[in-house]
Amino acid sequence: MRLLLLGANGQVGHELREALAPLGEVVAATRNGRLPEGGPAQTADLADPASLPALIERVAPDLVVNAAAYTAVDRAEEERELAFRINADAPGVLARACAQAGIGLVHFSTDYVFDGSQSRPWREDDRTGPLGVYGRSKLAGEEAIRASGAAHKIFRLCWVYGPRGHNFLLTMLRLGRERELLRVVDDQRGTPTSARRIAAAVAGAQQVMPGASGTWHLAAEGECSWHGFADRIFGGAVARGLLARAPALEAIPSSQFPTPARRPAYSRLDTGAFRRDTGLHLGDWTEGLDEALDALAR
Image 1 (tube, rainbow, N blue to C red):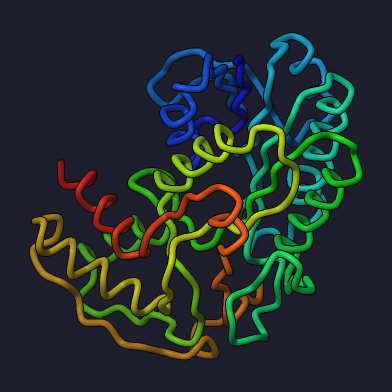
Image 2 (image 1 turned 60 degrees about the vertical axis):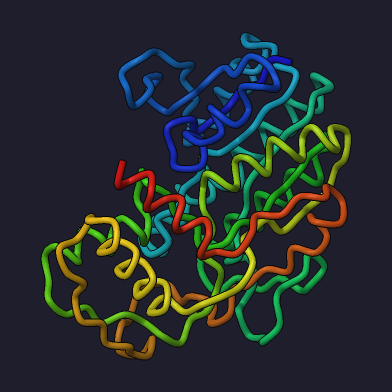
């Protein structure tokens, strides 16, 4: 197979470069046409959706994997047009080009398509109700892909982190070195999910059900608050010598940490459909965190 991977320099995209390699030739694409280590890549700028069909025609892949997205949740409230262009218009253009070429598309969405108002894990068929521009743009992207006629796999992710990129894990480690006290929200709950385990599961799903189309929730098992996640990060970081000492943690309500975009209060995703259809699972969220901390400590 020849796989075109967009967003190859992101935290999930970077892991997919390795995870997808056993499936065939991975053609990496980034916004600036360069890989983080300096090597060349195809240029794929989702802010310019009209440029994407020519890329697919030029590369002639057997599968397109789109790991690129606009993910600045708060800034999206002021950059609505850009967020929708990258997260909704571009995936729609990609999907229509894939449909025309007769190839499949793998795409990633988010727990933020839900409003977080219930207390059980969210299923794929639960009613969506995004609270902000970011979630609305991602939901619009899902809908555009489904309407395109392309064979597609949409994976909704939750609280993604890894040893590179911009994420809660790396932010906490940086702040833990700089401060003695951190105040962290304790009334939002979800499932921290390792980018590395996401990538491995996507590659596995493509092998197990290559022709299947649909939407699946892809996340680790278990749940915690942001405060609980931070506490586990600091405990593991100190044990591995990544931090000399853990900062003091104060649990606070969301009302004491106002942000431009509202977040869902409960984001845990029900992964039963993915496990049933693929026989795969990502394990408990603490296992993925341990792996990521081990990677940082090496």
